[in-house]
Length: 230
Figure 1 (cartoon, rainbow, N blue to C red):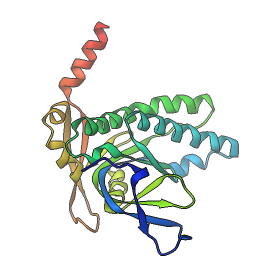
Figure 2: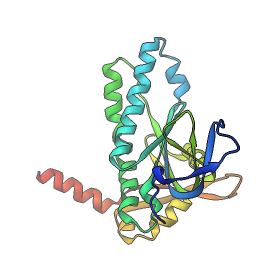
Figure 3: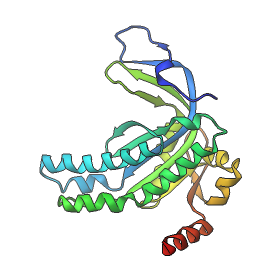
Figure 4: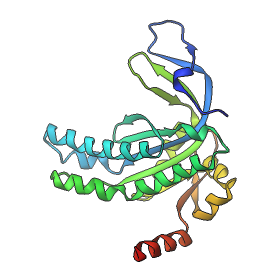
């Protein structure tokens, strides 16, 4: 499948030019990622000053977005206390480098909380923890008359949000559909370790397997030894 070029998409599924959104006649298969703050309601309830509240969300959203963009992701939306983004280049299911960037991005996100909390503490704001979920599948593309960016809809987006609660604090979970794609790349199976941690009832797929993903021990040892030598 060709990589999506939002400028070339035709959005025609609309009955009126005044409709808020219109859908493209072209679907897309890609990776979706959601980073969601844990216990956000309790955390934000301790922030009374509006200026501090704005700083709190700015630090979290801008930090996550900066890393996501470094790995070729496009930011979709900020929903409450979470950031959702997708990886357009994974529309090519044979592009191992694109899928590796997704995993690399996730692993960087795992440790990003240290940097985020350092910024939070500097501003006298509470520390945070979050969960990361990633999945792969078909999505429908839409644009809004009130926004310059595209939005994605469909079961893949919903399932990615559903499995997020399965992740550990500052950890990653991936859905079965993403795992199946990753298994087709021997190099990724060699560099990462996947562990089945349970299943999620989605309403569509009654038993949807969920996995954790971590750098393989061999890769971790290699990186540690290289850093020591440096």
